[in-house]
Image 1 (cartoon, rainbow, N blue to C red):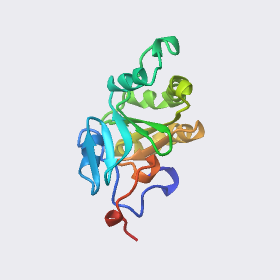
Image 2: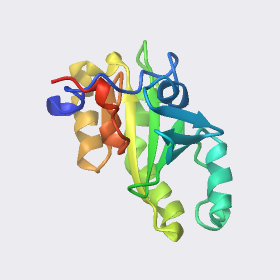
Image 3: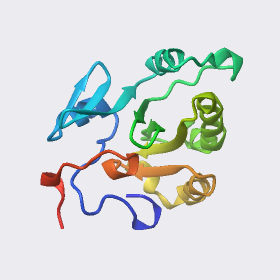
Image 4: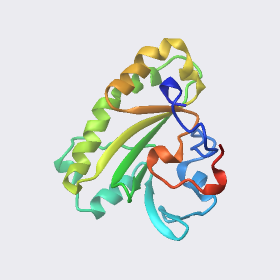
Length: 178
């Protein structure tokens, strides 16, 4: 669920929190989806490509982007997916917390990181969305200010799952509930 109660209330699909399953594993278990070497197919049509950490740089090299000429330090996304139909790269950072610590402050870096990814993808005219997948630790009211900040800088967050529609992927009709 995103701040304000928005999110996938009428679907049973979403990305289960890191540590339980990653994006590739999740999608491969959904009706109509197949994953082959990071390529995502829905009912036989290629709809996206998934990258984790260093494989993201294989993708940007493939499309002719020299990251060292654009940014000074590699960014390693927990999960990312380039959705072909909407020409958008979704960076998905998974944050899990059981005690107060440094993850608290990492949430405040989304604006900078989104801008860095935007700089990287600009030569290819690919849009960038940056989102956090948070566990329930971050529902505590003490995170209200940082969660408000995430939204205010054009980033997103979800608790425990991300609805497929938010990343522009087709939702299998058999999973839609009313």
